[in-house]
Length: 263
Ligand SMILES: O=C[C@H](O)COP(=O)(O)O
Image (cartoon, rainbow, N blue to C red; front, side, top):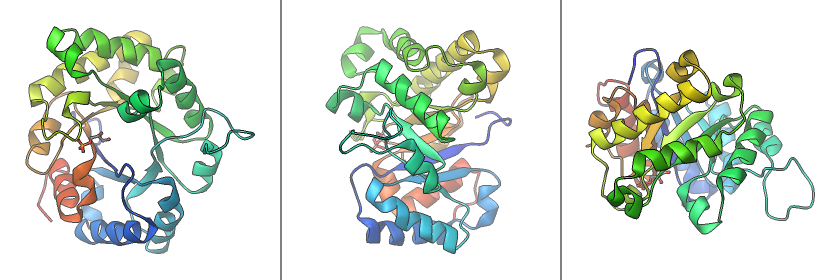
C-alpha cells in the first residue's frame, strides 16, 4: 500500500444473501465502522442484483459512508438481451463499482478478454468504476508462467483504453487457486503480480496513471491475513468473498486495512 492510494476493501457477496439479509448485513457493518475509518479506507459491498435497491435505501436513508456495486453488467446499453443488466440501470441505483471479468464469470460463462474489455468500456460509459479481475489457474502457477499470464490478461482486458480511462479502473488480482479454497497466496506472491500489474499499467498508459490506480488482491482474504497483504507496496486493498458475508470479520479486516484500531 502506498500513502498516495487510499485502500479499498470490496466485499463480493457472490450469489449469497437475499435483500432482507442484505439490509441486516449492511446495517451491522455500518454500525461496526464509524466515520473515522472511512478517512483511511474505502469500503464497498457488492451484493446480488436483487439486493441493490434495498442496499441503496439503507445507505441513502442512514447516510452511510460505505458504497455498493454490482457483480457484473451487460456490454450493451439496452435492448433484446434477456437476463442482462445495463450499466445505466446500475448507475441509476447509485452503484459506485462493478466487478468485471471475475474468474467465476470467465470460467462458467466463458467470458474472454474481449468480453471483459467491452464490459469495462460499458462501465466507464455509465460512470461506474470497473473492478477488472485477472488471475491464473493452478496449472499456470505451477508452470511458473503466472506473471506473463496475468500481464497478458490485463493487456487484453484493457486493450485500447486511453490513459484517462485506465486511471478510472481498479484492478483485482485473484489467483483462481486461492479463491474460496482457504489457500491464500503469500503476501510476496500477491506483491509479485500486483507489481507486474503496475509496471504494465505504466507501459500501456503512463507512470502517473500507474501510480494512481488501485490494485487489489483477492483469494481467501480474512482478518488474519489482510494486514500482511495490504502491507505490500503494490497491494491497495482486497476483493473479499467468503469473509465479506460475516459482519464482524468484514468490519475487522476493513479496520485493519485502515490501519486500526479494531472496531
Ligand atoms: O471476489 C472475491 C474472490 O473471488 C475471493 O473469494 P474468497 O475470499 O471467498 O476466496
